[in-house]
Length: 212
Image (cartoon, rainbow, N blue to C red):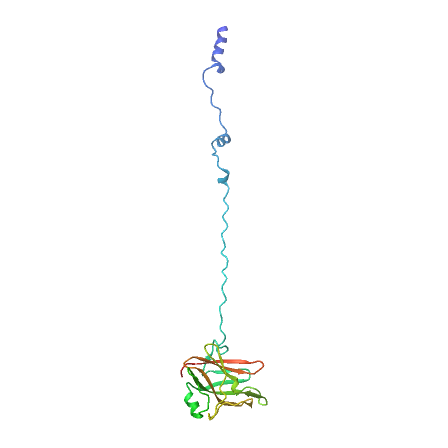
């Protein structure tokens, strides 16, 4: 019996030199052990940078010119028919230079100074008022503006010129034709200004070329 007891001791697993069989490892433990560490910054989505929205560019206002004939900077052609509140105007003829014609009519008529010349225009003016109302026209209704912005009055001391415009009244529906003379710079473009009325003038502008 002693011999059998000793054999039992020798054969006992606790005392044997054989290593123990590995215990099974749970999948959770394996996954936890093999799971790589990832940076917290790498796992968070990066916020997109705000896009700079271009600011609207201010567009400078476009310079607009006055309608043709309504300003001395945009005159109508000399042969244009122009209308105002009371009148309808048409330049039916113009002579430039007209010095010989004017002096031939009367030697005491205005003689242009050196560097100047005379212009003689013939205008037809119709009254647009009602037939029982009157229009008033005078040579002072016309003026000439030079390239330098100088306003020239018509020449009044004119004699012997047939049909020279005189101050007068006429009824609505009627029209008058008359001539007006000006002394202007020779060979320069000038602007003819026609004024309708004295207290609330309505003006029209016609360009007179340097030569006819």
